[in-house]
Length: 472
Image (tube, rainbow, N blue to C red; front, side, top):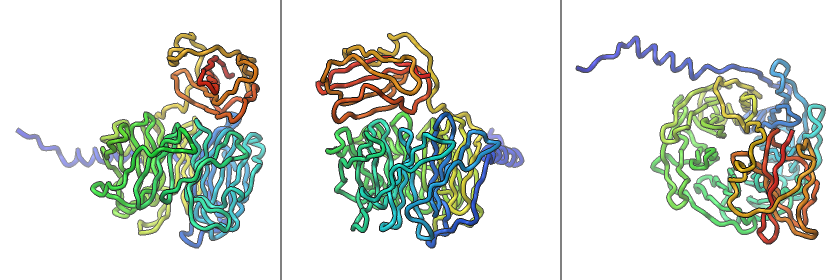
């Protein structure tokens, strides 16, 4: 006999589920009423980002005026550590974008082609100040989005335009010298709206044309790995942005089109890309997703009118919504308002959210998040060396343990180094530097937590040198 479930039980279950989804806490909110909104969408604010510098946490939010950097270290006393005015300001500004690398923040704007610049900001003096060390349109003026593949030290520029120049382009620049980007390649195909890049594999989101995936192992001669141009059976719109799962097997694609869901795409086999699930906020027919980021088993999305939406994607075939926080009271309509961007990758687990009209939000989502990278302790050499199969020569590193700067010895005089790699205990590549000529034997510590690492040098013959280092 089938058993009926009392309606009161269903109501209670629904209430409990909703309570869990909404069990978030506002840590901090900032909005400056003296700043103007854009003429297009009345958005005073745009993208957000986050970073750690000098063992302190920071949030970044863009406005029509410039870049605002907040010190989040003491949640009882969050404050604006610095403000950097932009080359182009005012009601014409809609988009800014950010990415950090090696102690620098890179800043672009997608408006004001005759005024905008690429800005590079030195973060090393924070919390006292941040210093603009590059502010120029010599390389390009406008850009819709940027992404830095930190493993390869490559800056990808999407939707770029030169000063007073025609048309849009996608370019790649080498950041071997972080304050002096060097042109490497220009993508000759379609307009790229946004991209995600990891270890030289680039996912280009190309608007109405779909997506192209490329291998940039040779940055000047990339190879197309796959295209994803027709997924209409799952609801195809404007292919806006996406993010790759931490295991590299699933790409979460967001169409910036009302009512369309996020697509989970199995990318483990580039010859057979397929959608394995779709999911959405399920709040309103005019709900529209914007920017997703992933940390561990969770996808965090700035979801415009629906604010912050958080999904458990531990099973990519069956994602579930686990948290939400509404940053706006604006009614859903066929425009672009509300939560623009999100950044979930601070060690504290606090989530940065930027609302186009309401400003900066710092949210505690009450979830156990994977650490960005756990501190490590010295282990037996055999455990770590096991991740390297090929024969390697030994490096000598001093001082060791090291704090900020260390020296490398062990190569023959005149030997040419082409690549320097740093691996954590799990064998994961956490930093890479390409070397164009010979290398400087004195190396500045990359932005990695204290702990034990393996450092690898590769010379022009393909020979490898390995050494162990402890950062403290």
